[in-house]
Length: 268
Image 1 (cartoon, rainbow, N blue to C red):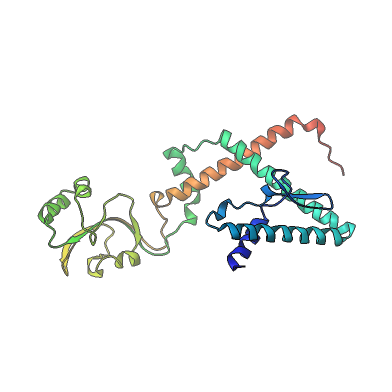
Image 2 (tube, rainbow, N blue to C red; image 1 turned 180 degrees about the horizontal axis):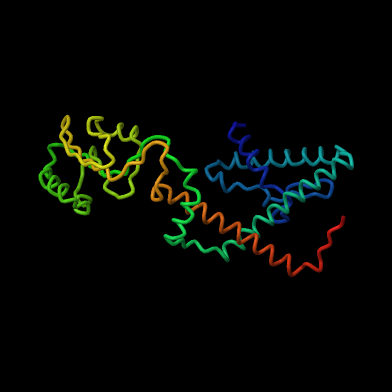
């Protein structure tokens, strides 16, 4: 029998569990294994022979485990420990489902600019640049591009919308959005170091080794300065939403606590 068949049996084992549906495959000590407990749907490419072999192995494996479970008598303390683990796991699953349902029915994911700014001001000290970062606009094209003169004119006029509409070749690069941030070290991997300035804002266009580089740095954040809001807006949104989720659950539980206060007894 192939290794594939054996590994398939192992993956199928987690699907078993006395579902009570389909044809009976085996029975021992009052426990019954049904055909619905063997899920072959994920292995649609198996041959019929392998399918039969898998089912046979699965049945044998199930019987051996039932024998071991019946034969091995664990102590009352160990049984209690298992029961506690099962109970805790069951409760955690129910609580997880309940929380997701409560949150989905009450969450508001709309965040206005004032809330972004207020939250940013409260946590920005935790977000400092580990090295100098630049907000940039970049266009790299072949010096022989047939639209080179038009591109130069559009660049000088800061007409980035028009530049975005121009077709580029595979070896050319365009990053003309307004939220492009890179560290200086990362930018140096894309363009010649000679194009990079120490100034906080600058613009340069130059032909180097058959490529024409258009670079505009619109702002710079130096090492240990606070990262700008725009740069970490996605992280802030996640933090705000997570805080809202926690508040929803806390408030929901508090409401229940107040309603059921007469049924709550706390002993010394």
